[in-house]
Amino acid sequence: MKILAKDLSKILLENKFTISVAESCSAGGVSSCVCSVPGSSTYFLGGIVAYSNLSKQRDLGVREEDIIKFSEVSDVVAKQMSVGVKRKFNSDFSISTTGYSGPDGLDVGKVFISVSNPLKTVVKKYDFKGSRQEITNQIIETSLQNLISEIKLFIFSNK
Image (cartoon, rainbow, N blue to C red; front, side):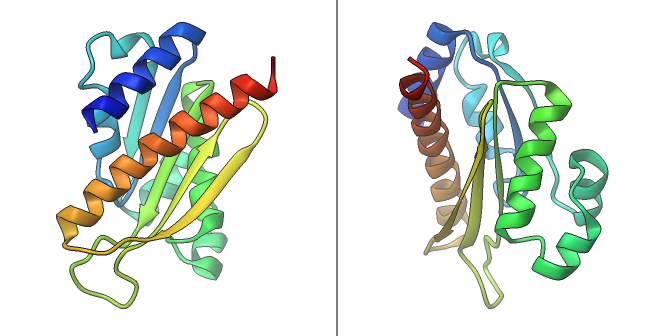
């Protein structure tokens, strides 16, 4: 993951882009990984660990009726989280994670990761396997991969 964080740093610095992060199931792991790279304060504007539904609503603007209708682990909520944190920090890009890390429950490993760029927001669903820590690590790694991919796509499509 350290290599991904360094790759992310390079692309953000080269293009003078900023990011923000909204995390639920990754519990701050994405932010921690991003900030492990020296100089990350140049592009990392902030993050919110919105573990509770109240925090998702209060801090990120997620609509309570959407949590009730679709659940806190849904593409709708993931999208609202990434859009909300992008707006809150006024960043160029943002990423959000929401899912079930386990170890218990019906949908353990079900995760939604959303990336918001200046033009659109993309949400992807995953079904990770493993222990709680293994799932969390997969969420963090996949989040960084998705963010890098979406930034590269944005750069390429706007040349």
